Image (cartoon, rainbow over all chains, first blue to last red; front, top):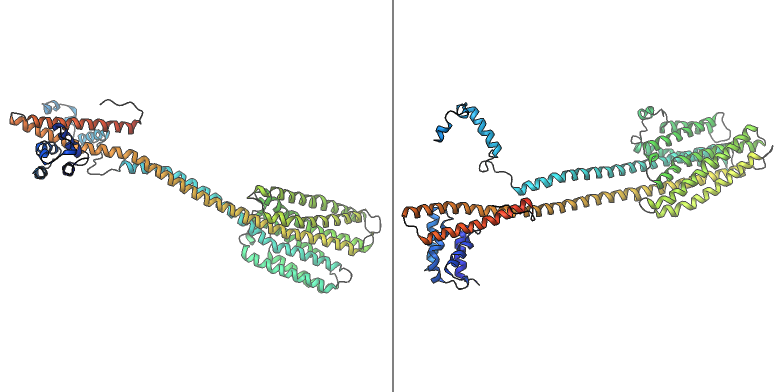
Amino acid sequence: MATILYKDVVSAVVAAVGAEKGPGIVERQLQSKGISPDKFDAAQLQDVVVAICAAAKLYIADPGKKVSFEAGLRAMAK
Amino acid sequence: MKMAACVGTNAFRRSPEGRDAKERSANLRKGKHMNSEEKPSMGVGRKIFVVAASFSLPIAVLVYFVIVNINRTIDFTRMEMIGNAYQRPLEGLLRHIEQHQILLHHVPAGSDSAAALDAEKRAADKALDDLKDATEKYGVTLKFTDEELNKRQRQGSKYETVEKDWRDIEAAAGSGKQIPAGIDAKYGDVVAVLRTMITHMGDISNLILDPELDTYYTTSNTLVNLPQTQDRLAQVIALGSAVIARGSMTIAERTQLAVYASMLQADDLDVINSNTQTALNEDPNFHGTSASLQANVPPVWKNFQAAQTHFIELTKQLAASSGKPTLTVDEYISAGVTARESSFRFWDVSIQELDVMLDHGRIQDYDTRKIVALLLSALALFIACILAYWMTLSITNPLMKLARTLGPGAALLRGSIEQINEETNKGKPDPQMTAVICGELSAHVDDMNRSVQALQSIVFGATSPTVQS
């Protein structure tokens, strides 16, 4: 079962890029790092936050929204 | 270079108007005439709904015609019932005016002639009042107006004529102590008017066109055969009683009596018997069995048959008697009046049962059919709407998914290009960023493939071969 942090991260990404692509973005970045959603914690988020932000920002056209999204996700990793 | 390539072509040398026209034409061919941002087009779901609604239109038209047809049958039947209502006072007049004539010529021994005549006169007056009421109520509907009667060469076949003729007879007959000359002709005239009015009412009220066997044969009796035999019985009673009273008869009278006896048998009794039996036999086949018809008609029919048969026998005996008749006037008239009364009793029951068959049988049945037709049509339409809605969802849901995939896909492509440009400008691409871009593009390709397959299954069906991308 996925951790609450994982769900929060997915929610944040979905809010930024939409439900169609959001969960897939997080899942792919975690897979590339070999991280399981069941044991996803803040330390692991720090490892993947750059990749998740980079991937999600590819789908965001608005520069302001890119900045606010990245700030929010990085805050979750602290 | 492109501009140079274009210089010198016919297209470039055309007038601006001509070029615009060509562009518009090309855009139309490419389907670019509808700019979705400027003019929002109707969605697929609405288009499917419009298609479904367009197919429901013919169904609605068909239901309309079914209901119109049922209503026409109900209106047709209601006209028949109006005809029956109008015939009641006409029969009453036929009964009492001819009975008045019989009594005027001969009152049975031991009877008070003035009282008997007065009773028939009052009964005829009552029937005349009823005819007046019926004419006020149904006269126009049944076309008893001068204009309509003239069109059908039935001038004078109306209430006013009957009233005038009957008042003349009443005035001429007085207390009945003397038989005025020419009064029989007046009786004949008023009876002829009454018979024509029955014929006219039968034509206009649709009774003559009744479409179902049980009511058709009952109507045949009430409209044609019973009035005919009632009139004929009065004529036979008049001739027979006159012959008996005189104590002798001419060859012509004997022949006439024999002809009357044959007609009472073959044209009246046999036909009425056949009609009644057929009506009783066919009754269950039209809107179910009428319990009251099956219960009420046979007893009065049996009495009618017995009375008719007896009177026909007496008439035959009278016609066969050589020289002086052996019957008394009272015996003969009594048998004749009994036969006539039984025919009116039979008519009363028949017309009552005819109304029951028309109202509780046919009209109720068609009212039920109308409700069933409307309910089934509404149910069919409801089911069609559900099917159309389900089909719409099965088409629009994958399309919406495809649209949701394509939207972020476009953003992804733009974002990826920008990122690749950025990385290229740096001179040293970031391997992690490159991997992220490749991973997202690859995932999007997978999404696109799945969407294309879903689209193919919508367009070609689930079993169609996959179009290679």
